Image (cartoon, rainbow, N blue to C red):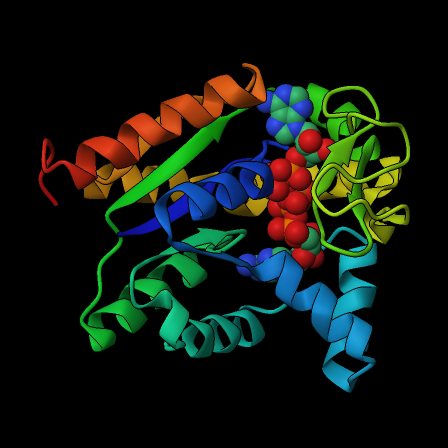
Length: 223
Ligand code: AP5
């Protein structure tokens, strides 16, 4: 099964995609994570991408589309994938359709995590991850059981993203409104759009998503 998760920065796409991956064995593909890995490698492309990300803008469609096309071909995507952060513009959505067509694949569902933009600044500026295993936490909403210790691996070092500063978050939210929101209509018109309520608790949203994916797996819905 192939899914796209849509929603503004901070809606919980990454949080939920990791859970869907663990529960349903479909691979989480985050263009943001891919770009951050490229930036950490110090490559020319990575340096260019980092400057754009730190300003809250969008990296060029051409770079992103090539990156995703290669990644979808990998063996771990054969059982399905979850796209998180892609597509983000109408040209990206159209290119994805062409790319999947050529590979003989389809998107089963595009799931919008509907969230209130104003609340996203608090969510993002309070977010941090374990430096060793990447598990995600939040100062207020998702604390580790023992302060300063990762629940998953026991690590004690944590990272915060360079683009999670308030001013950059506001630019990212503006980019979402200007360049990404229109693709919700694009997918609604194709009849593949589903919505979940992103302002609920993390576990409740996971339950809504599992319900959608579970129905599809059980063959209750076509597609
Ligand atoms: P990317 O990494 O994709 O960032 P984003 O879309 O801004 O999304 P986030 O990762 O910030 O949010 P999320 O929805 O995953 O939220 P999360 O689950 O972490 O992209 C970064 C940059 O890369 C872009 O700005 C752009 O420059 C570039 N880029 C990437 N893809 C691109 C593309 N296709 N084209 C061009 N450029 C591209 O949750 C946030 C926090 O809230 C966490 O701490 C979590 O614990 C907490 N939380 C989650 N859900 C809840 C809840 N229900 N209640 C309370 N707290 C919650």
